[in-house]
Amino acid sequence: MLTNNVTPTYVIDDLPVSAAAEEVNEMSAPAIRVENAYKAFGKSRGLSRFVWLPWRKAAPPEKTREATETTAPTEAPAGKSGLADNEDRSRRSVVVAVDHVSFEVAPGEIFGVLGPNGSGKSTLIRLIATLLLPDAGRIEVFGHDVVREPMTVQRLINRVSVEASFFKKLSPMENLLYGARLYGLEGRQTRRQIEEILTRLGLEARAIRNPMEQMSRGMQQKVAIARALLSRPRLLLLDEPTTGLDPRSKREVQAVVRELQAEEGTTILLTTHDMAEADSLCHRIAIMDRGKVVALGTPAELRRKLPAGNGQQPTLEDVFLALTGRRLADDEDQV
Amino acid sequence: MSVATQQLRATYAFVERNANLVKRYWSWEFVWLVYSIANALSVSFIGLGMENIAGDRAGVDGSFLALYLIIGALVWQFLSVIFYWITDVISIERWEGTIEYTLMAPIHRITHMAGQTLFAVVYSMLFNAVILAVAVLVFRIDLSHANLAGGTIMLLAGSLSFIGVGIMASTLPLLFPERGSQMTHVIIAIMLLISGVYYPVEVLPDILQKMAVLSPATYVLVGARAALLEGASLRELWPSIWPVLLMGLIAIPSGLQVFGLAERYAKRTGKLHRNG
Image (cartoon, rainbow over all chains, first blue to last red; front, top):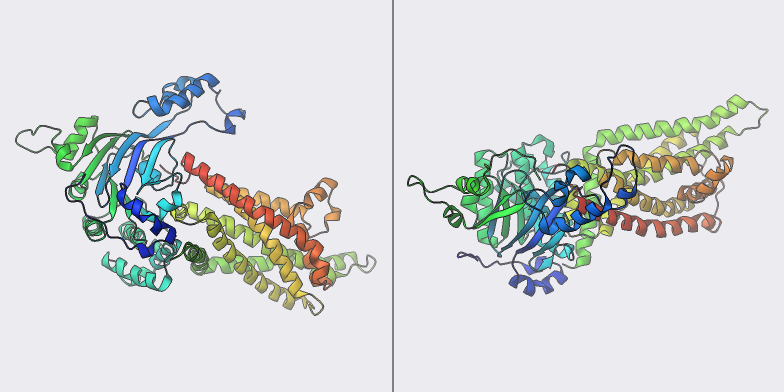
């Protein structure tokens, strides 16, 4: 899958005994396998459909709803499901966030998911991170199903989201110590590692013990990256990690990503709408639009999809525009 | 590293994190402590006030009444602090957005809740010890005949069922970030009404008396008053202890089950994340 594939070297001692026993199978499996994954939001389900509320619009005939709920996962067009098409009858909107997405990521690969806001990148990351349950399809991380074996998957992954979520009154040290202990790390050694990582990411020693609320967003994002690195994940999910960072911070984060992949063999799934970032960091890129993967390949392969115009190589932006008819910078609600 | 070691360290993560939150919000904790002391004293002064209002004819023992009320206030404070620490931290996690990281960590839900509740019980005991010390000074309470150890055992036994109820109630802020925390007040308010915190349950209407049988606080209050007012032995306290142990035995697994279902629902419907 990759010409410059890196053989990962992992410290099995750091994993729980049961995880170490499964290591052999994990090594031969792809880092991520996504098969026909589908996720929609806003479906009417459960007992609430039987409860009459005066302010609720009239429910659609049962036949319509059954038909749309069962057909949506297999026949829904991009961006809208059958249920949304029947909006006049059902008066309920359904957002198809991930629409029959399939791909594999090799161990040690940096895999980019490129798309505008609302294309389903964050939902895809949450599905892999066990934070959402897919409506249909299958997702595996190193051979482990994210729905059936969530805890095994959780031991192998960590995630950095676009918004740096922390207890803002606590310091980076306190927040990171909490995060590290959840993964079973020992306190004294972790404190030293936290200082090392944060210093390497450019945080001043004083800032490490001050409340997070006193830090800039860029600094908070670096602390978020440090939190993910502490558990030494085999798969790191980076959801727009550089959004909102100044150019220098962006370069520092990108350098950490490269280093992590080169030195630790960590598999990285990176979502971004920064084409230059995707181009320079990723071995392969999937372009997503309205929940679907519209193209997948190395940056060079994607560019070759368009003929060179005026002697100039097409950019990923040109490729995206040609494939979707939209620009990456289109401002939509994030899904 | 064994799975057990990992889970133990994760349990400590919650204790340490909550201790750090108390440290960082120390001014709020101080305000809350002052409010709680003032509240407990105000309720207890009603006892002395009744003696004054009724005069000699009614034969009201104001000191006994004040002690009766302060025990109610302290027991209620102890149980409600445990309840609120369990539910409020989920609210804070929703507010800060850290809930996704906590639920993404490779830990059992029982580990998560054990850490939360361990801290809540220890914190609540320290918090109430300060209130009790102030009350003893203000009312010159004589606890020489009280069975303090029995009262403490009664409180700890009762805390188990409140932990279970607290875990169940914490699904409200998990699923409803904006108003879930306020919804939990309903549970506490109903328990306050039916459990005989400031009056014997016998004065309640029939329907509320029947409901009181199901409230663990009813038994804790009866037991704590027997231990502190009458110096009842553990053997005498047993009729109040076993029902709350039984309730705890049912409430904690039920709470974990309910939280698990709510977590699954949130993961299915995308409710863990608020904007996208």
